[in-house]
Structure formats: structure tokens, C-alpha cells
Length: 396
Image 1 (cartoon, one colour):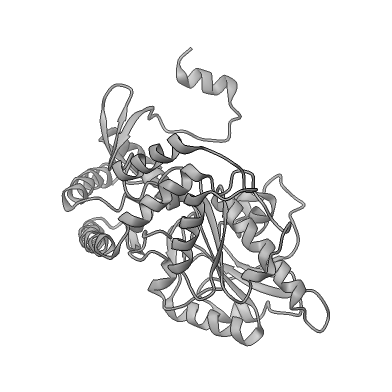
Image 2 (cartoon, one colour; image 1 turned 180 degrees about the vertical axis):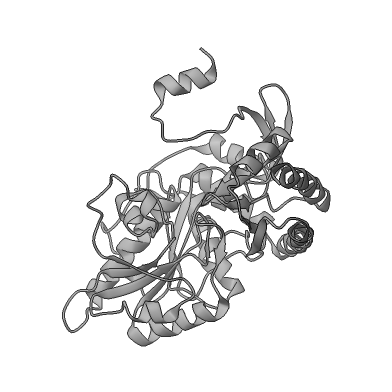
């Protein structure tokens, strides 16, 4: 049997895979089993932000592997402690960290932390537990995070969902205020909705959201699983908005491909967790933390400034395509998190680009999503634009 037949026979059919069988990857490139080279403008869905098999990251992992792989969270692992300090000092005053293995786990931790804080800071009618989320949001695949996700297509066959989640409209502060009651404890939002089609929040909306949370004594949670760790041109996406959340979650690119999630709580709520309230066997794995420390050294201000320049160049080139092809409705995003909204289904464009050596993605049926490594060059952008141009012409 070939690899596809083995997968079909032995795996649950949860993934609709493309035709690509990956043999190796390096920097912004991927090679298939036949040796064909591809320009990767997905980076593992915003995971390998500093490029595939980054030399510094691999070296740091190997050094840690030679020391130890796992000792459990019953003991101190120096790489984990160092990473926690680095992440906290980049966040906000009083920040403290909990490490997990994934974005869903990081968000699950944020939900638990908010509800524990709600017990300690009740309304006149008792404990608060309800979290306001947003239509078209995506927060993960666990039962709590799928219940917090505002897309019905992810809820099919999973009901009854967990209670305590209600949904407002992004960039509509009135819709948020209407949902606040004595049970409300927090508002949870992606600064840029990723899975629903790369939809950024308005800066004024997030400022208003911060003000409402302060006025009503609610926690503000930012889910930066996809848009964090430099993706928007800042280490934290919230830095673009001049708004500090009470809790921020990260994962995906935090260890550049090695499983690692982080929940960062601020001084209002970080002390709510005490011994036994939460835990993880593998969360904060020393090898993953060593990789993440290397990532953080790479993503400095010079590195981010360059990614912003490349992003600006990319948007300029995409706008030329927009003027050329009427099927492009809108180009939106922040930094190198870009969505090209089409008037047609985007899957044919994705497949055409793959056949021409460019890896991209379509989300929400009509939005071509572009999440290249932050290490790309103008030459890479030109190559991607050329292939996209051909793909759009082919569709038209």
C-alpha cells in the first residue's frame, strides 16, 4: 500500500488532505517525495514563523535533548522557567504564565481562570461564569473551546454544548453591551479572526471593549493563537491596538512547530489559580521551551520591522491584482496575516497554486489565506504574486 492508502485504512477521516506528500522542509520551502520544491505561504497554518527547520531553533532543541526531554511539572526545568520570564516581561504588569500543549488548551486554561476569578469576584446575585464570545470566532476543538466558538458548522453532532457562552458581533460594541448581565465574567475575542476569513477588529472597537470591561468589572481575553508571536508585526497582536487584555493566549508559532501553548494572565486575575486548580503532564516541555527561547531571540525589533516592510510590499502587489480581477472583493489583514476575499470559491485557486509550486489555503470557502513565514523576501512575494496572477486568470 502507498502512504495514502495506509492513511485511508488506519486513520480516522478527520482531515481533508491535499495531494502534497512532504519529504523535507527548510526556511520558506517544502519538498515533496519526488523532489519538487514549493514556496510555502502557509507555514503550517501560522506555525513556522521563523521558517522551517530554523538553524537556531533546531540547535537549541538538540542541546536540550542531550540534557533531558521530560521530568514532569513536579520539578523545575530551567528552560521552562526562563521562557516563562521572557514571555511575561513582554506582556503586561503582573503577568504570569501557564504552559500547555496547544491553542485549544491555552484557551481552555483562560476560560477556567476567568471562571475561577468570577467565583472570587461575584455579582450581587452570586458567582459569575458567562463569557461573551463572537460570531464567526474559533477558539479550539475541546468541548469548552468549541462551545466558545461562534461558527455553527463546528457544533454539528456535538450538542449539547457547554453552557455559559453567548455571542456578540465583532466591531459592534452595542451588541456586546446588550449581552452583559449579572452572570457575565469575561469577553473573549480574537484581535484578528482567522478561520472565518482573516477579519481584523477595529482599533476603536477594542478600545471600547476595554472600557466596557473596566466599567463592568469584566476580564478581557485575547486569543492570539494564530495572530501572535510576530505575525502582525508586533510580538503580541494587542500591541497594534494600544489595548492590554487581562489574559492573552498563544500557541502555534510559539515554538516554531514544536507543540507549546501559553496562557498569560495579568495582575487582576493571575493569582486566582492556586495549587491543584490546573495542570498538564506535557505542558511546558523542556525541548519545546528551548525551541521557543530561540524563537524569541530571533523575533526582535529589527526582525519585526523587516516583516512589516515585506508585508507592506505584499499588500501593494495584491492591490494590483485586485484592480486587475473583479472577483477579488477585498484584501484585509494585519502584518503577514492576509486574507483575499473572493466572489468565487477559492479552492480551485489553492489547487492551481499548489500545482505551480505555491502552498496557500482557503478558509470559509471564499477567502484565500496567506500566512507565510516572517522570513520571506520581496523575491518570494514576487514569485507568489506571479502564481496567484496565473491562478486568478485561470479561474476567470
